[in-house]
Length: 215
Image (tube, rainbow, N blue to C red; front, side, top):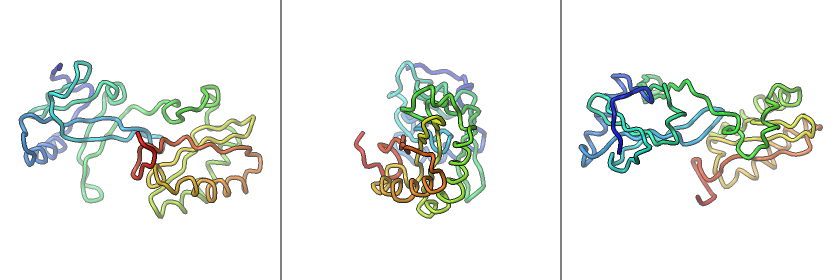
């Protein structure tokens, strides 16, 4: 297990550090625990995070183990490049809470898992993609927002008319997401965009608030 004082991977503001230390003080075996910060996945084009207390001894040699004041922070190896230069802050908005300020953005491949690279490379600036985004923002997302859901276009094959969607929030991992996609989202998109030949769900339903696929 490597340990260092380099906070270039992840920095905590004073307020955020104190919030974490206060929470850590309520845990048993405090001296053995560290704050683990891991990138969980991608949602709505942004990274999502897991923050939890776990034994610092569980860290591998490839993980970053940081000493930030009186707090030890572990960043798993897979998350180090995704968090480089990030800052954990405490915000008083919406009742207060920890907020990650991350200069890094998910790559196109991370946002559109399983989509051919040549399709991802087309971007979302084509006429069909722009119209699909408009339909999602205008007709679809206001409707599914009532149960915390969201649908985003992550890739579009402008030539073949294939749209690749990612569901997040309450729709990610929800057992009803397939019905929502087929009976709601697809209907809205096809009514407005008759050029669409296929709509592909690239969501990782093994994670999310209500996962229904086993890991």
